[in-house]
Length: 265
Image (cartoon, rainbow, N blue to C red):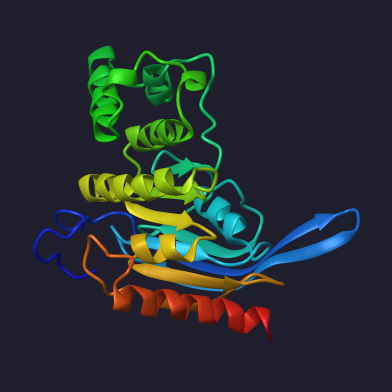
């Protein structure tokens, strides 16, 4: 990714970790009705600190691909490497945020963010939790419970919890899909701020083309039956991005054309 210009939102420095090399020949699901090939011939390289969005219609394997990157799916033909190490299962170097925040309802905001940090001393754990609550703007809500939060706030807690383990890669599966339009726009901007501060590699799955173009350095377009990569489009626009900008809409249209070309084929 090119160096930032002006006050663009770009990771500070040059992160050395978070490089993904994906080479999946085939991923099948086998059931009582036979087998279904979910992914085929997926080849992709993601650079350290890059923000990548994956778009495609329902059933194209976006979430399956993300689960493979997270190590939640391990039965497939091929290999995925993070910084030269093969991904063989879940690990602290990859943080995952789902469409539903999945916060533990019996824990406060602070306790949810601290969940999984038991290996740290109390002082270290407290400092880290405070840092990430500040990062997502929720310090004043640390004693609240999930049912007392809005949808957007709950997702911010989920992002803080995922980041607290300092993962090299942050994986997000349609994290803003259930939010209203204005909250979604605000959350997109906040996610970019978090990305700028943390310098993690980010892979985000979305159905929203505008969201992908607003956030990503690269947009991966997938087509279904079975899921494969149709194209990878670079978003060579400075940040922050204007959604009404001619170049923004040119890229948005190019992504849409890729999706429609398969749908109408």
